[in-house]
Length: 224
Ligand SMILES: [Zn+2]
Image (cartoon, rainbow, N blue to C red; front, side):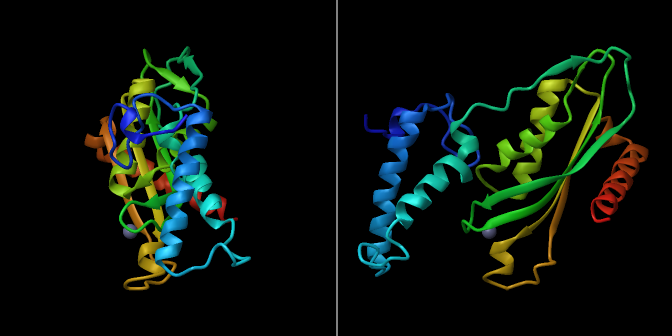
């Protein structure tokens, strides 16, 4: 079966998931068609991929990388989340991180890499989720063409939807290779940091402070 993007209903923005995940055979067909287009791109760029031992398999390899890894969060279902009742009505701030962040910039198709931190202020009536699920949620939304301002918000809003907490904070600190490898060629130590706050975390300075202090402490612990 030939895969046509127009057959798929729903949003097409680069960092939105399709309405329905697409199955493996559609993804394979999408990969084959993308590989053909990448081969054409190589032709235009005068790369003799048919005879060049270094690039012979590259169009196929890159197409597969896009469908199965870089953009996987658009074509697959969100991670399965195991929710637990908040039986003891724990109501203090939980902070987890650093979570490995790997994404791709929507403007230049260059890697974005760094760390994410998630803060949750649970509600007595809400749910809590297994700690490793925050890593999965970050990975799911990062596996798209992204800009950091939207990525941080998508992660936060998803956690709100799933756990109905009193507050959420998501912080990302990342290197953008479109800034370090090209253009202004900034130092690889140059990062972008941004934070999304929601609920009580958006309005209470003491909670923001506590979240940021924990992020610093987690960073320090991770570099020991
Ligand atoms: Zn960029």
